[in-house]
Image (cartoon, rainbow, N blue to C red):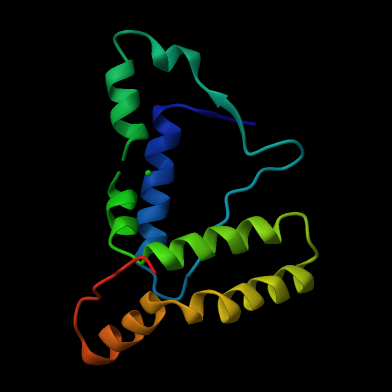
Length: 130
C-alpha cells in the first residue's frame, strides 16, 4: 500500500496535471488493490524539519479548491449527492440513480440554466447557488 509522503504527493500532482491537460479525460479514479489505496501518511514526513514542506505539498488539492469555488455550488452539491448515492451500487443502478439526480435536481436549478446561458453567450457564469 502507498504511503503518503512528499515524493508521492509530487508524483500525484504531476500525473494529475498531465491528465488535466488531456481534454478527452473527464474523470480520474484513484484506487488500490486489496484493502486500500494508501496506508496513510509517512510519519517521518511530519518531523519538525519536514512538516512545512509536507503541508505545502499537501495543500496544493488549494489550487483545485480555487477552481471548484468558481463552479456552481448547486452543481457541486448535486454531484456530491450523486457520488454518494452511487457508492456500493452496481454500475447500471448507480448510473441510473446519478442520471435521475441530474435530471430531477440539477437541471431544475437556476445555476443549471445560468451555466447553459453563460456557455452559449460565451461569458462567465454568475452562480447563485440555487
